[in-house]
Image 1 (cartoon, rainbow, N blue to C red):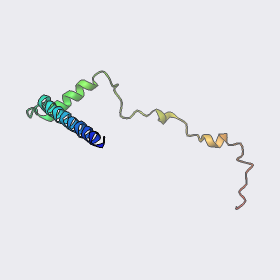
Image 2: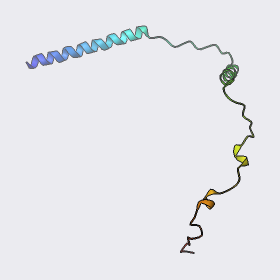
Image 3: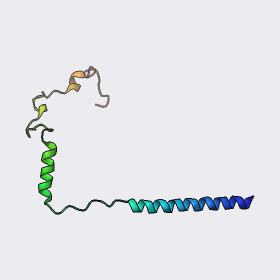
Image 4: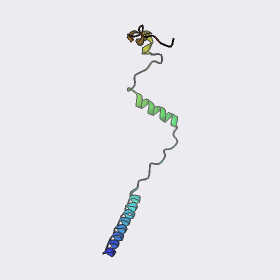
Length: 93
């Protein structure tokens, strides 16, 4: 019975190996090579064209000096929100 078990393990291993080899050959046969490199057209012109076409109509015009926080008053909210400011005394002073 031990011989039958060893034979069965060997047969399963050979079938698995054969399946891996077959899958590798089939995969290699149907593997598609990547696209050929495009001719050197001038990457700067292509980049500008891509950027212009991708951002046209999607992004608003932003003024470089627009700062919405420039009109806010300089108020520290902690000074107004601390009710214990006058009560607390530092014992080490």
